[in-house]
Length: 76
Image (cartoon, rainbow, N blue to C red; front, top):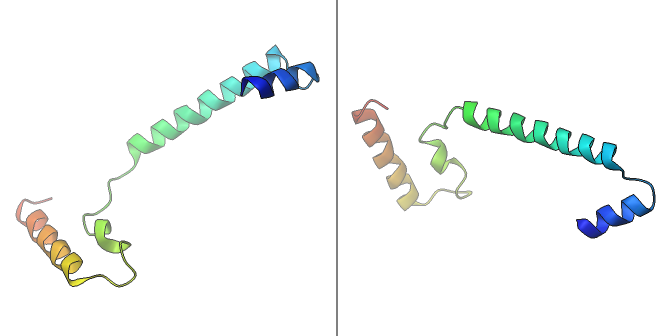
């Protein structure tokens, strides 16, 4: 990154103002991402098994059934 920044600075394509604008935009994007990640609703337990294999194995179906029974019994 430092070599690219040096090249862009030397070629007149990057200056302090542009660099500050890039940093501010990056921080805004990161803050938005953090906000959305915290607000995201956790997936339903059965979603853990939805895309593991094209065709679920018997073991995977058994595990999904066990998890479903456990989550139903504890009210989750």
